Image (tube, rainbow, N blue to C red; front, top):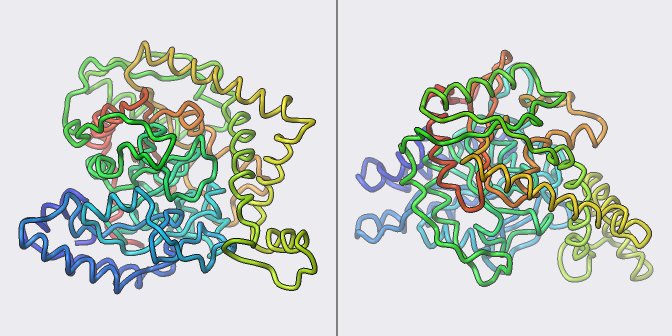
Amino acid sequence: MHTLSLYEVKSGLLSKKFSSVEITKCFLERIEKYKNLNAFITVCPEQALESAKQSDQKIASGTAGEMEGIPLVLKDLYMTKGIRTTAGSKMLENFIAPYESTVTQKLLDAGSVFLGKTNMDEFAMGSANITSYFGKVVNPWSKEKPLVPGGSSGGSAAAVAGHLCVAATGSDTGGSIRQPAAFSGIVGIKPTYGRCSRYGMIALASSFDQAGPMAKTVRDAAMFLKIIAGYDEKDSTSVNEAVPDYESFIGKSINGMRIGIPKEFHMEGLSEEVEQSWQKGIDILKDAGAEIVDISLPYSKYSMAVYYIIQPAEASANVARFDGVRYGFRAEGAKSLDEMYEMTREQGFGDEVKRRILIGTYVLSAGYYDAYYSQALKVQKLIRQDLASAFEKVDAILTPTTPHSAFAFGEEPTDPVTMYLNDVLTVTANIAGLPGMSVPICLDKLGRPLGLQLLGPRFQEGHLFQIGEVIERNANFPSLKEIN
């Protein structure tokens, strides 16, 4: 049962091939068996089994919701009422959320069963899931040496790839759904900014953050996104745009669609195997009747610089609330209020969070605001114009998701800037607020997954599912049926 897709699990539950309790028990056993992956921060066995029993009763009575009885996991930055929510940080090690996020409430309303909360880079700051206070997450594709799963949604990626759940929520600020999806051989989509509510998500950079699904197949991701998308009056950035039936795009022909290939993404540092996987994707789409169009995104080369000014600026403002006064960790032994703030933040935050607070505070400071933050906002507009112009000529853009495959522990870059370059191909979508999806394409010579990224115009997620399913169907990507 554990290798079934969301679509197959839903069909199996409704046809009574198995019960929600049976499949929930199956996943809980696997979570216990593969604790070495460290994919979870909190597991909720009693709550999950009780939810599964209720779902079986609803299925029997014909009152099942759209995700009734389907065991899911949640990245640990979604507020879940009565369940610990840590954001991977010592600062929130024992924090019990007093309310439910909109995304998780939508999943509960649809009948989902929550197995637990997944590990993540601390406050979503990281590209390898090695900054979590709760330890590193191991990629299920690891063989002779443990690989990183990507970040910051590495726990969710490992749980889906390792068949510890049916699907998972992630969040994507600069690639935190798509990059781990590529490293872990699964599908992940970052919707258009404003498509999913951010209410009840612990914020990293509020103008970039977006909720999204991580799943085994493109169809699964389409089914999942339909549930969590939609307007929410509790989120001022939520957009009141009708949510289509994304699953209806699966299986549609892409004959005549125009797919853009940006020359700027053939960049230095792209491995030869990544280039070859990109060409494989191009050939698949061409054979399916799509027209391949060479395009240029001249300002995209500034995306990393823009992102790593705006994101730390917003992050430093967002984590200012963690001061030891109202909730979360508080350092002992302080002799004054100022000392309590300093000791709490020094002891409560990890190195990466401190680094981004310093960068963000620096670029927002009086002497440097105009030189850095103000300039970054201007270039952000140019990047958005670049993409808007491109989408007047093409229906979607195809690029690699990452410059290389997952690296092993101990092989990660030692300097932060090189580590940040893991997001070099994904940040452009966040800067422009556009939807982006990663689909597995092949394995490299070391047996590590590679993914391709599809970018689309605002609110055109349906086209990404349509094109992504064609790539998936023809790529013959080898599913990880069992962990090594």
